[in-house]
Image (tube, rainbow, N blue to C red):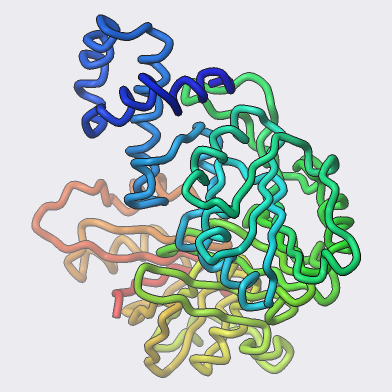
Length: 412
């Protein structure tokens, strides 16, 4: 969708058409589109129907706000979930900043959160249509202004004018060019391939100390600059982002994990982790205790399994696998607890016999730290997923002391 079509949708008959559409229903969309073409030109109808579909998808991220917003497929996919954007905005407000330059604002999700806390927002995007969409999405906040420009073209305030200034960067992680059938372009993962590049992001942070940059959850630990904070955030167990914070925005320098849900947010930091050298590795599968703990994925991405080891007075099953065993039961909001029913070296024959003897004819397989074809193992166990009156078992396949092991567990 180009900038001209964005303007058509945002004004006059285009906006009236868009707002009059019923809740999107894939089963009736084609029929509705054909009917609308009797009154409107086909390009406008196609654009409006595409927006209706995107709005339906956007409710999960934006709630009721989605009904008054415009989107692009890439923009919606990369947009920050509104609850996480609010956390970003609170960092700027808590640091006493008054103005935020949002360089690479996309459809304006974070800018909306900044403006919602009465921060002056200067949002910038290099794509003309996306910048126009951001302006529409920010129309309710007079303190927000959107400009079509590249990040390196922006003149930032200097001296006293920059005293209460913060920067927010959300580098593009998709390449421009041919889109797929869903309208999305190819994703990039290298820090050198994002735009602005990682080196350019760090140069911005060197000029403006109060800087935050939203990056992929695959951000490498070794790339974290001294004194900065990298926080991996999850939403109901799904890791969505890693944000690097500099200067007054870095509340806990080093690696942290924010485990977020609709109910609460729990932050885990390096200060919570037990020193790795203090705990010897688990010698064998026979050393596994009664309880098994699995930390939230943000904790694992942040490399903070040691915090779980410390919290439950336990031992990680193997370096980097994430699972921790302990003789005691603890309730943690950022980790799941399982009771270990059986622990054995991975042998499909022996495991199949144990499952059958204990009345299980179905399995849910969880794996980490091993190369394993779960479907093949299920066939070897003769667990086809078609129940015959038995029960389902949860099977954890991982490694201990370099060897593959199988644990039969039940959620606590």
